[in-house]
Image (cartoon, rainbow, N blue to C red):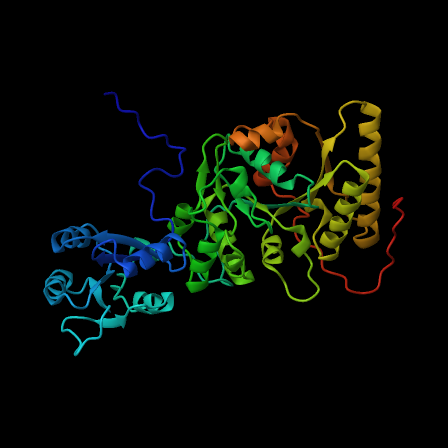
Amino acid sequence: MEMHERQPDRLFDAAAPPLVEQARVIALARGSQQWVRDLNRWANGSVVEMSLSVTLSVEELAEALAGSAEPALVVLDAENSEAIAATRALAKAKARILGVATLPLSHEPEGLDALVSFPFSPEAISAQLAAIPHPAEPDGSEAVANVWPPSGTAPPPGPRGLVTGVLGARGAGSSTVAMAAAQTLAAGSSVAVVDLGAEASLAMYHDIDPTSPSLGELAKAAARGPLAPKQVHGCCLPALSRGYSLLAGAKRLDGATLLTSAAITEVVRVMAATFDHVLIDLDSASIGSPTAPSAADAALALCDRVALVADASLRGGHGGLRILERLLDSGLAPERIALCMNRAPRATFARRTTALKEFADFAAEAVSSRHPGHKPPALFSIPEQRGVEGAHEEVGRIPPVIGQELASWLSAAKEGPSNASAPVARDTSARRRRRSAPW
């Protein structure tokens, strides 16, 4: 059979590193036992960050231990003294042995590193995973060389990808615009889309399995320490029909609580060192919080460019301009912003031109009152397209016209950054607010 060479532009393949560097757990027991079922449920639901394999005999356990150099936690029945002795002889320093007592024991069996009584909690397993012996990394090893420095330190020298935030009012179509621009950019660059939206809807648009890795798992890993590029690779899923890679949003509300500013900063920095373009689908409602900076604010601070998507309607334009005011008040230079009027009417050219002119006039007025002397944001018109919903349902190609203008603007920024790319100093003094919009 003819063998095809691996495509050089394929970022990930079947031999990619683990999705997240999870601890290995090997259960030596019958799969019907209740504590084995609990471990399996916790592993599949990401209640405990671990990968679980079940072995039925000591011989299978020996194969599992020999198949990987990573240390593991071996869990078995505390009543089975023969299995404990055999496991101790096999494991040596490569594993921690945990015994599960389903009945009261007169004494603790020999050969165990720890003993728990059934039923036990997920926290008990997490504590045992934290105690697994890990060999020290040798100096100059690849694992050490690939780890990013902690947050707050200077990034390593070398090319850095362009980070773009895409946001808009609810229903404006910012997620679709982000995907369409990424699809166009992916024709000649490595591109990643990060879902930082409040509803984490990009997993739905890409028909991703709920058990797949997401931003929540990566943020949890970032909270434990600096990330390595292979951890980012493992959590990004390739959208084969569109050419880019996707980092899905947090699957559960408890996962969203892990999206701290420090964790998001670490994730974005490592992704910028991995991809040519990183497009972040931001939650506009979280931008500019009066209390404490949000994860969206942390991501926005790392963005080189920002695309603001507004629906071509009275309400859509009103919401878009209010978001623009918040961006300008935060100190973002207008030259780094692009306004994308989505679903612009196709029927009458004069009507579309009038809507664009009104939107541009209000945007220019907002810029002149806040940052005098700066140019207004770039303005793009995205005509209304048919078949977008079908493309989402089939995870197929998005109509190219949706993202072409934005992708061209980002490509030009990647090739030669503008002299006005530095942020504008935030002016917290009183200023006149001109609001001449008809609403």
